[in-house]
Length: 244
Image (cartoon, rainbow, N blue to C red; front, side, top):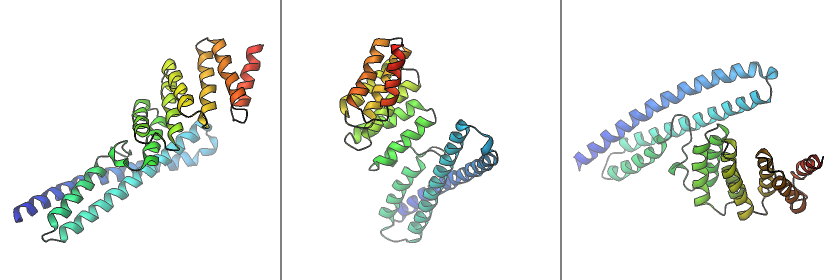
């Protein structure tokens, strides 16, 4: 009906105005990030490793903002095409466009949402959670990792997701919880590359908690169970140090 078409057109116009405002916001963010990047690059040789990590994060944020802007622009153009293609099929097409727009607009300023926007894309969901971890947003990262592990427990990135779930607790000072989650890595993925790392990190936590015997046990498990791992030299060094 004409009234329904008119309502859909009004709804789409409102959504496109909202997208336009978000796109303007993203452009402002991109300009700010570009300015920061230029300043950072000019003094890069004088910065230490932590500064280089910060620069990498800024570049990553800029990439995310550009991706968001591209998605918004493409969606707006598609909706305009739908509006121009008036006819009996407008209602269904417009509804589909509105649904697609809702997924894109659901993203927070400059950030990839760790939600339905990543359905069917396990790598994207994992990377989004990992970005939150690198930013120090440990609870948000954990929520994304939980979603990943629930939806893709057999994915090749599942051991990494479980490992970083443990890391969210370790970085936030939850040592007991971290030990439990590292143990889950060994329980669920004993043959993964994260298993010896989880053992070694568990040993370090036990040392931090003053449990020398338990720490020694973890380091010995690395040496005995994972002789070809990257952690064996570190574990042997700790065992040697504990003997002195």
